[in-house]
Length: 344
Image 1 (cartoon, rainbow, N blue to C red):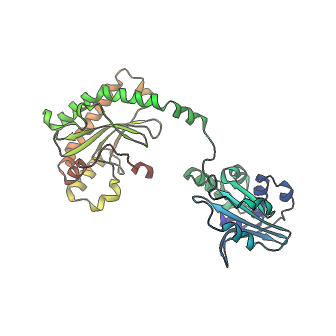
Image 2: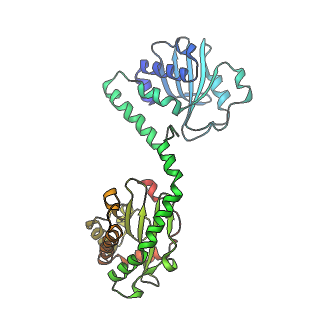
Image 3: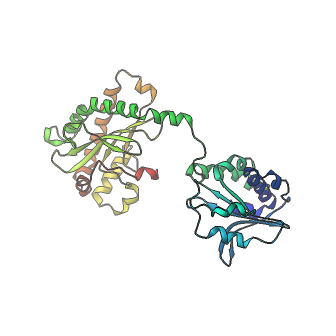
């Protein structure tokens, strides 16, 4: 963003006009010259200035905040750097509610125009257009990335998602009811895949009525393989995207792809085998989308259990359950929230 302002003085002037109008200073916006030189990260005796726009009687310093509050002493430091010109101003643009507001006498300083939020500028910035064709094509994509990654903060409430959140408790209860209905068939399928005896596999939590939850949207049934120790297998629901999915996963949550080089040969062989059976490379999960057509099927639960039974056989055939990694997984606490999904 800063590079665009530095490269295009007319674009920089358009941005300053937008900024002033957002601050309800249309009177000043009308006086902005056609071109403004912009310097990013200007080094001054007291530190660095995030953005500085200058031309003739104009000197506008902008303090930018994405993931931080105001720094100590920033207000006086920035004001002291302003030139002695007619239009010398200080502005702050923040991602969230500003932390550490300027001193109480800020209103007595006419140079201080106040703070605004990135979200207040976003629509106006989307309407700006650099003169360079390449920059003009990249600009909206750049803003889209900033918004999606959260750098612009909470830009706009989505009523449909708030409505979905309002039904989250009912949705979770419904998912739990479904898992309770298939928990015994799933265990029996896993026991069959592991040799057929009752000792081949068991619920991690006695009776299978307690589930494992993660804050990023998974509810699953963890199993012990064999019943009194050894490896672990999960089967359950993930709702982090639409449609939600039913997943089967060996072991605990880890980034398998990032650890591949450190795995022993037997684990590498197991991973390659599971990937050949459509387990994903990142988290080693087999994923069955639960779309509307499948949910309307009268045999929905039977289809899910049959699909899971095939995945259980894949895990057994891979040899993973005999590896040292399976033993490591057996010592982990399955009821802890996993943060790994945030990387996906």
